[in-house]
Length: 371
Image (tube, rainbow, N blue to C red; front, side, top):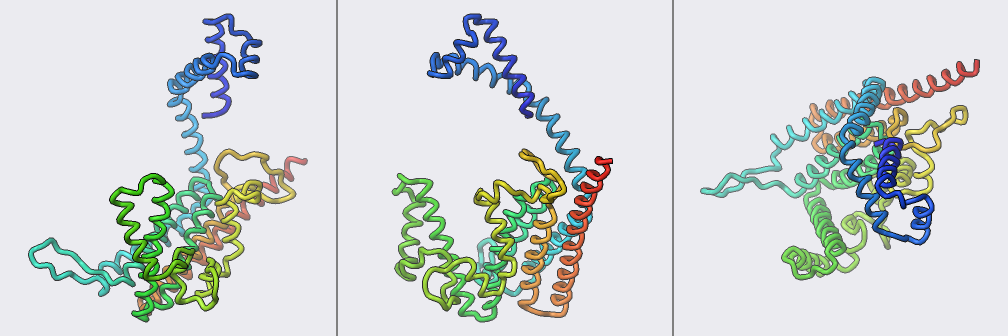
């Protein structure tokens, strides 16, 4: 609902109240604002305005939705090739994973005669596939954000994608060492239990007798007794692979698998996530060019700035899938990994081309305006 429509409703409601209660003058309203005099007057006015909003919201929102559909239609047309290539990469990734699940020897039927059929999945395969499924879902989320024109939100979600890709790279480094991969996977699972317990305690501060709390606490006590108090700290699940002493940071995980070449973009994504000054003042959706005046305040999506989050998503997803395929480098896996490399390069070039095209059009428009 636009501000103009809200102000119109507010003014109409206020006038109606004044007609019914002539004693409510501007002076009375001003005094009420200064010393919160006559609180019931504010409540009455708010109720009238809110009722008016509910009566008119469907028509107003329909108009807004039609405008947004028009915008997304233009955006989809402009960015059609790179967005389609990215969606194709995501689709291929999902097909490869589902085909792997259907054919892997890591999932075996369980011997349970007389019961419903069930399977046993190896710990290493289960962990890798959980990471890959989350990576693909996150890539789909980014795709939807890009199609909606929300580039800052898209690069924020890419940060998560990069983190999961880094963890995946670490697991694949030791995938063929059964003892190491099982140890790291168990530690990773234990860290998830600790995180769940910390989260539960913060949300349910006074609840220490529920069945879930007692179960989580029992599990956590067993984990800490086995692994030590330091296991509470971040990224301790990766300790067997870390040679340095002291706290483990995400950059340490990146270094293990040599996945730190996107460090600058990771920091840029952090600014958007955490509401830092840089994230507030600068946006991927605004053209940062001294030759082009930018909007002071932006309240909606943008047709510009999809290039960087789109390119980063292609890089991370392509790397994740190639890494997974090359765990077992059969001929078809090597070919598929090369296909990801080719489509990734195309995505990078196509996103860059569209972004440059928009910038050139803006500059040309401003140049023609001068004459």
